[in-house]
Image (tube, rainbow, N blue to C red; front, side):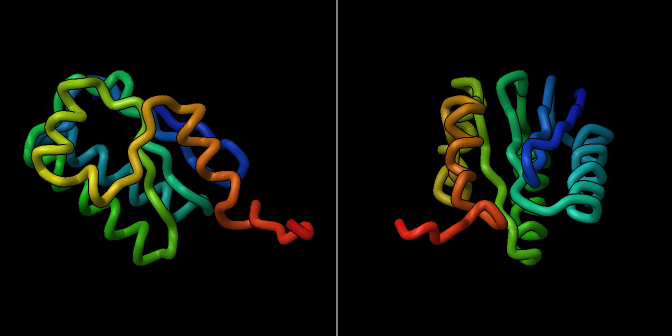
Length: 123
């Protein structure tokens, strides 16, 4: 598994590539999520376009990340899951816990009203 992150406004995009499964990959994912919570504000967008496989431990890691972000008053959004990964998210009902967007652009657009981006502006 490979993880890479970038900041957009106050939100972090974490690209997850390869497999998120029991062992070192799940541990590395959890450590990265903990680091993101500690160093940034805003939402976490998980870019899953290059995630090819997720097992039950990986699913547990996603749920754990969600709980940590919710406890901090922040959200996690999933972007671009491959068909196979999306099917797994649906089977485990994670599609009811996470907002899931078909591409990164839509995921980022959904954040335009989050956090400090919110302004009344007379609308």
